[in-house]
Every structure is written in structure tokens, then in C-alpha cells.
Image 1 (cartoon, rainbow, N blue to C red):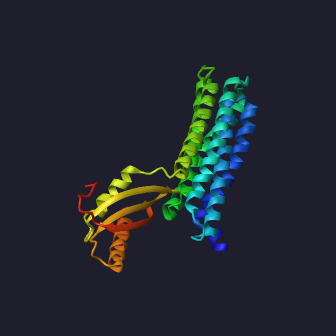
Image 2 (cartoon, one colour):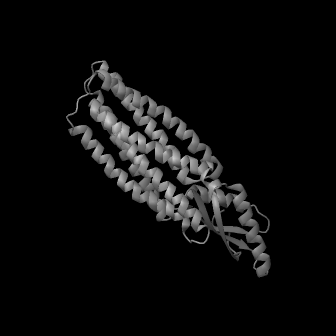
Image 3 (cartoon, rainbow, N blue to C red):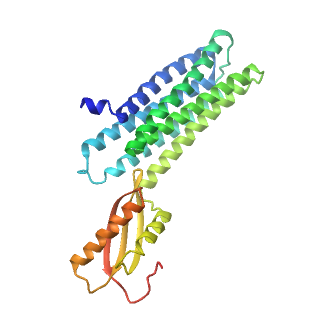
Length: 293
């Protein structure tokens, strides 16, 4: 258990949850004191990333405990993404309304300097958080870690907008803070829509036609494969499940056809790293030409 807690994956999630929680609190309090709508909106963005990091961590732990015993485990991240996407969409709408309707005005002096310092530190901290999450994601190929890394990037972008708002305000552009706050709200809204749409597509088994064509091209030249029928690629989290039909000599025994199917499965897994499962159906080769050729 201790080794697991010290793993790069666990470290990335701890950094994401703790970092976003502290950042959200500081940004909201300092932004409120400095009258910066942009920094308050950035704090709302960090709260969204806190929810994303926490949910991703829970999904990671649940999948690790379930292992391969839970059928449909690959849909878990998609379901979490759909629910979070809907919640983030509403958060984005609220931030847009806040940026538009709030009467806050940026103040000067120490409060303004503190707001700028918080934004700069946020960019630096999120850069470090992205590096930790990206390194762990490359080792595990986890969609949850990829989501965490993207959250750090978007948070750094939101903090950059706060810096631009500070510069614009000091240059005499009074609407800079409100416009940047509006942009942060739009960024959160876009995040929510993207996550919700991705999760919905995965849950509905929206096939990937381009991957299906590439898999068919991989299988067609294989030895003793007489033709390729239907090929469907379904998302399973960050990877894909392939369901394909091949044509073999009708005179083959069941055992021989099974060996060909195993060879096809192995070839697809080797040629396409994003594929995690391959299901091969063998049928007698028809007398008519292969419809996919």
C-alpha cells in the first residue's frame, strides 16, 4: 500500500487535488479583495479542476480495485466525464453571468500587486503540475491522468488571462478585467461541453470509422484471411475495442479457424497501440468478392 501511495500516478493525483484546492481558495479570496472579476473567475476554474482531479482519482482507484472482473469497466471514465461535463457546463454559464453582471472594479496598490503575484504563481505551479501528470500518464496510458494534465494547461491559460487583465487595466482599458473574466467563463463552458460530448459518445459506442479502415487494411493481407467483413471500433475510455469479421476457407476445422483468429487479434494489437481488445468472428468465405475490398 505504501508503494502505491508513492507511485507517480498517486503523486500526480495528490498534486492535482491539493494544488487546485489551495489555488481556488487563494484566487477567490484575493480576487474578491482586489475587485478582480478575472481572478475570481480563475478561482472558479480551479474549483472545476479540483472536481475533475478528484473524480479522476476516484475513477482510477475504482478501476484498480475492480480489475478485469467488472464488465464494462472501460465505460466508467466516460460516465464520469459525462456527469462532470454537465456540471462544468453549468459552472461555465454561472461564471459568464458573474463576469457580465458583477459590479466589482479592480483596485490598485497592494491588492492589485497581490492579485498579479497569485496569477503568476498559478501559471508556474500549473506548469509543474502538468509535468508531473504528463510523466505519469506516459507511463500508465491513463485517461484520468491525461484529463488531469489538460486541467493544468487550461488553469495556466486562465491565469494568463488574469495577467493580461491586470496589464490592460493598468494601461487604462477599464473593460480588460471584465472581458478576461468573461473569457475564463467561456473556457470553462467549452471544457464542460467537450467532456460531456466525449463521455456521451463513448457511452453510446460511437464507432471510429477511420480506425476501422486502418484495422481492415492491417487484417486483409494476413495469411489465410480470405476477406474482411464488418469492422467496428468502439471507444473504451482512452482506447478502443475492435469487433471484426473475417472470411476463411470453409473447409477449415474449427481449431484451424481459431488459430487464424488469434493471429488476426495479435496483428491488430501490435499494429494499433490504441486498441485494447479485439473480438474476431470467423465466417466461411463467400463466393462473391469481399465487399470491403
